[in-house]
Length: 598
Image 1 (cartoon, rainbow, N blue to C red):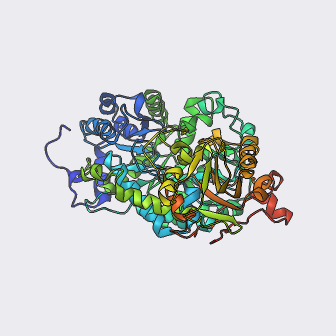
Image 2: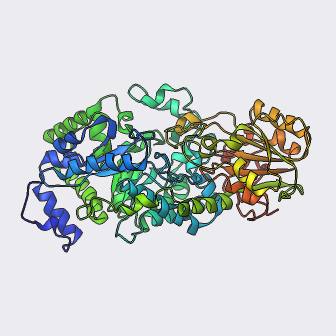
Image 3: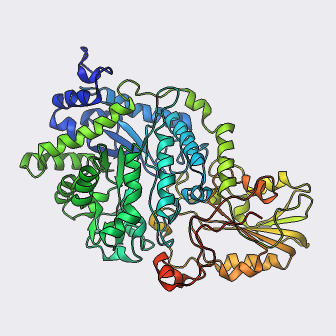
């Protein structure tokens, strides 16, 4: 920064509005558009951050430094922060990440249960504490912005992002979402907090199966459309406005009232119109009717889906109400295009000033101008025993006991055989959005498995075979099955019935034991009807994260089952989506709110 005399915007004793107006008055058009630009970290250098006055950098899923650890993360983010402070006006950039269940891109972070499990806890205080610890680990890397919480209300669990939703029930989603927001944005002892991004506005959980293929433009420049798996993610929510407001908009209104300063807009559409082009919802409802003073950010390359004409895509999205664009790759193209649109009068200077004012307001509120570098103490606490203890509590409270015919709690003296590859695999326990975007099986980050937990909890330990080949009969067998890790549309699945391999394993082990306990790792409810009668007990463990050993605490009765399913369990695929079941009058396999206590 070249200035030496302090101006109004540099004076922390002045009001935020005064500081915003003073700074805005000194900015050139290039500096303003730079603030509206968010770039993926591998697509820009620190030098270009200075050159183009870039307002934000992000790491997408898997956007990690090498080696991937907290120290290299902090160094990487600081290089971009330092570059932003070298601009003429010294406006700090803000770094964003998808820390959706802990700081999940970073090896060694504590990985909490995904929201599908947190919703089952029904414990808003716990969720707030989980967000506080997540904020601490995010701040350890000098990141100030977390693209969470998702307040999606999934109505069709075939959707690959279902696990990002706390529940199918709007009231529960709202309660948990507000709690998570409070936790992230709670000032710590150093006066720091993390900006939450409430997402994805709106109706992303209400899209119809196969509606994505009906979108008029969703493929030619969208890298995500290359996979045929994408069937409902980024699709169309086809409901009237009263239904949209009741089910999908309500959590956003409540989080805004609770202090949300950023909302991420959804890839999806409402009745055929892309959310990123929806001036009525983005400007008239959020900013007008609700009085939202924060800023709206686009999703990853999402404006490209508005039109094949990039100029039209940019002007439409900005005029609809987008304030910052997650470009994420070609920042020069975006900056050049928006500059041209302003010069031609297709985007007004007033719209630019409004967007930049909103972004600057959050940066001032965060204290970035006074404290752009976070306290080093967060590094010492990163991945600590205290943080892992909270994750264990979250796992314990998230478990839902679906069935129990007198086998649980496990007697500590019992002869127990454990089967299933996921029982000793942290990657399966964590699911998607873990280290890599899609996640993957294997020892991807430090953690403790269910196998390790049972070894400690049972007097004679436990015999383990991933294939269920024990060679001798056991008093009790525990079988662990799991969905392969996935994220976003890669997890869209037409059939949620247990695979033939999982069913075969359960049947195989059933013949080698007196009692069988089934533990399910999944990002949603599955159709388990074919195996229910083979199991004496069934436990939904969702995606527990790195402290999967905590499942053993509950299986042996050291901690009681308290979780209640935040989603319906269906008897068959014919009952999906939720609206089909509700219209049919049939009973599900297990209803919303089901959960035994032993």
